[in-house]
Image (cartoon, rainbow over all chains, first blue to last red; front, side, top):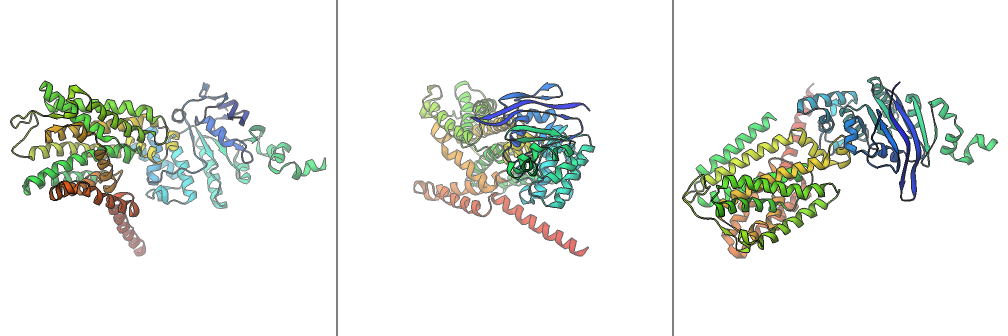
Length: 246
Length: 328
């Protein structure tokens, strides 16, 4: 598979606080990469560095061979990388359809065209029935769906989902998992930040684990669950059964 | 959208016929001012209603328009129609110069900048001898003519000139609202981050909105100057006008193409009537009453009077839908 996004040695500092330190990994065409790690590991910061919200202190983001480090957010989106937000940002005074259309206008000039792109994105995310509801009046799961649909409507090649399952119940999580797999089938690559392991493990092709800003592990899900470093990072040294034995 | 167009045409036709039925000079006077203010409200609405960037300085563009056409007419005998365009372009340039740097910053810098710029421009005109400084310009009186945009025997032509501009502007606004630009401006209003993340160059779109808005405001300014035939910096560049534009749009319905017209239809008659009936002692009473109305609206329906209408319509629709579901 072809690589489309390379993260090379990204370091991001806020004053003396190092949020990301030398993080590198790749995303290939048509795969789901997950970024996991405990709270404060620097996942969202890394997201912001990739999407141009922050300019990284050092390191590079390479998209299809082009260096896009520090390029503005809207240009990155135009190139084909679109993100959603951890704290859902529904456009409140606009209906679901209008929310999604706002995204769809990136690849179309006319209202009709935007409407048909939006239609597709809403179909994909099960929002068609709710298209006339105002953003402000949606439930949390639907707001998250709108986030995804709006991002999808920009027709990205890489979709970046920032904790789109947090706060959802079991069935809703299942829906989002299925959605991720459906999106992968359509040829997209996904970069997913998530806390919920039982959701992440079955769908990921590759997992990158961050802890305190550093990448501590990378690999396929079955390797990650058995990785000592990862277990320690999540449970702490004290509660790590294996380390107690030794 | 087709329905919207029909409503707009009917609305403009009604305003066009009204002065032919009610042939009173004071009514005609109110109507001219009302239409001019409604036009200003529409212009302001593009920046603040659609794009969510609060401007407290629209009087500056209004004044620039008034001055441009007046100075060209007074000094060089150039038709106000050409002056109008020149004013529009100048105002658009000023808007570009203010907005581009301030829109790159987030937060309320833009609102503060507009406030400051309007005041700076006023001081500039007060001390600028070429435009007669604080004395102001009395436009030369000529015989009634369309070319010079002066009519003394009747106010009807002014009504139709203002209405013509208003019609163009309201159609433009409703076009913008339904176009890519409208969606983008609204997305920017709702969330700057989301707008950027879905590929919108927020600075450019906000600046474009401001330039269009300033251009329209200046055109309205030229018509106003030709109507009152006397201008000075204190009547044009006042905060009073900027605030009136804000208030009437907020009362009518911010972000809605009908909002400014509704707001102007309440504020302008109110201020003209209190001015005539109470004279000098009544100064400000209109704004007091209006302020009260705005507070009431802000508390109960932040989207203004049009929001109230929408709410009732939606309720009626929902009740209708419920019925259908119950029947099936």
